[in-house]
Every structure is written in structure tokens, then in C-alpha cells.
Image (cartoon, rainbow, N blue to C red; front, side, top):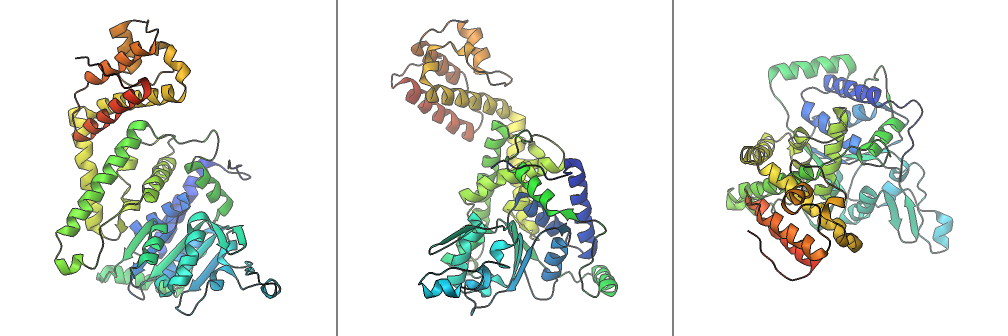
Length: 437
């Protein structure tokens, strides 16, 4: 659903205020810059974040200080326990409805009617309650029995002292796309800074001089998700494809790293897995980072910073591994010229998709079809090789076959993509095979 800009919204002013808010929280919560950046990115894309640490490192203060930077958002806070039931989060049961045999929650003041949520010690909750939270966290709705209503929830910060792995908690962890590990820093100077802040505020939240309207945050989230006409942030086919290559490479490397650990340590942790949900949401983060740089399109520097989503903030080894995956692939594609081949193959894929979706286009010459700008597009190639006349589908088929045959893939990924396109050509034009060298 398209979002209407709230009164007075200005993109540049919002970005400036968001960065000022991050700096304010960084001064208040010492030595947590990476995690604070991660939290604000999570808020910008409207996702949840899980913070793990030992007791007493200021998780609650961090969440409270972040939420205090916004105006107009309702906040739900709870400390989880095994005795709690779903009504702790969704509101007490309506007694009159219960007398009729209907389970209906009175959601006023609950997580359902709050924009921000903080759940402390989330893994202390029982699996029945955690299962009930899954839909609310992901679909932003309360769906229990006969009751189905949308939720106002924008982002939840959850905290825990430990991870409890089960079928339910694995699904829960996938709802918290952003994850952080806070390790106490015993450096004397850091401890001095923490002590100085405590003397100033006694561990309390400090009010900022200027708050950010939650309506502005919500609208910015709609922009980065592509829900505001005229405010789109584009992701080119090449950037999209390369993003998926980097994510896959990083996933493989993480699993390889796990296999190199001692057997007893491997037995406590499953294979590292990036779900299709996380991979899709990575695109929102790419657009959010472009948005913060005041750009209208994603570039490679945004892809290089996906560690905020794919890695656990506070674990340098994960960040280093992601950087290695990105640098390795980017250097390979840049040095070999593979990016040009990727653009060419994706241009063909787009044209094939249009032809397949509208078979009447098969009777038009390729040069009359909607073009796709690349350094050397299929249309340019067709003009040079065949001239302006390709009156039938069989002639067009020969153009695609010849164009594909002219490309000698520079990487294994491109070889796979070319094979896929060869199948698409057969699917679009028929099964007859013709070869051009």
C-alpha cells in the first residue's frame, strides 16, 4: 500500500536527524557504535533485532535510549518468563466473549497496539508463547482462533543472556533478522567513560534536544521498501544478481568455518543457513543504505555493508569473513570483465521474459522491442549481425542462440546463468536446437 508523506516530511532533514540521534545514543551508551548503527538500520527497514549478552551490560538502557529518540510511538515492555501465556503480549481475554466460547484478546496497551516493543530475556518464555509470537513478529498481525487483526508493531528489540535452540526458537530467530552480541569491555578507558556517563545520568535515559517523529520514520521505511510512488530506490539487475552471489558465497564460507571447528562444538550448532526471507529482506537494507547516502539507486558499496544483516554485530570474525566473500567476488568480476558479461546475460533474460509473457511480440523484430541499456545490448548485437529484419520467431530464435554462443563465460556462476538462458530460449521458442559459432 502506497504511503502518503506526513506533514512537513523532508528526506534530507530526516536523514540528518536520524544520524544525529545515532550519535546521541553512541555518546550515551559507550563503545557500542556497530550495534547502535545496526539497531537504527533495523528501525529504518522496519525489522526486529536480537541482542545477546551477559547480565548487566546495559541492554535495557540501550533499547530505552533508542526508543526515546522518537516521538509518537507507543512502547510495549515485558520481561519474559516460563509462566507467561500469550495474553501477556496480546492483552487479557475478553470475559464476555469467553462466556460465549470465543477466545478474544483485549489488545489495548498490548504489543499488538504498540509501535515499538522490548522483550527482555525472550528465551525464558515457553515454546507455546513463542509460537504465538511468530505471526505477530512476521506478518504484523494477531491471528489466534477467531481473532484476526492487524498489529501496529514496527520493530521489536529482544534481549537474552543465552540462546535456546529448538524447532520453535529457530523459527523465532529467523524473525529477528538483525542480531548482535554485546561483550563486556574491560578496557580501563572504556570503563572510565561508562562511569562518567553513569555519574551524569545514574543509568537513566537522557532526553534528546530534538526527537524524530515516528510518522517520519514510518514513511522513510515505506520509501526503502518501495511503497512510495516517485520515491523509488532502484536496484539494477547486475547489483541484484551480484548480491545473491555474495550471500551464497558467504553462506558456504560460514559453513566451511563451522566444519573446521572441533566436533563437540559443531554438534551444538546446526549448519549456518540464510533463509529466503533474509535474502529477500537484504534488498530492503541495500535500499536503506542508499537512502541514507541520499542516492536513488543501490551501488556496490551498499552490498559491501550487508554484514549488518548477515553477521552478528560484535563478532569481528563474521564481519571479516563477509568482507572476504565480497572482496573476493568483486575483484574476480572486476578484473576479468565478468560484470559486462553479467549485464549482457541479464539483458537477454529480461528480453526473453518479455517475449514469453507476451507471445505476440515474437512477430516483431528485436530492434523494435523495448531495449535494455547495457554496454552491448542484444538489440545492438542484432543490428550489427542481422540488420533490421527478423520477421519471424525462428529468425529471432537464431539471434538468441548466436548471441549466447558468442559469450564464453568467465566464471562458473556465469556459466550456470548461460545454461539457464539456453533452456529459457528453448522454452520460449520451442525445442528445435540450432547452433551458431
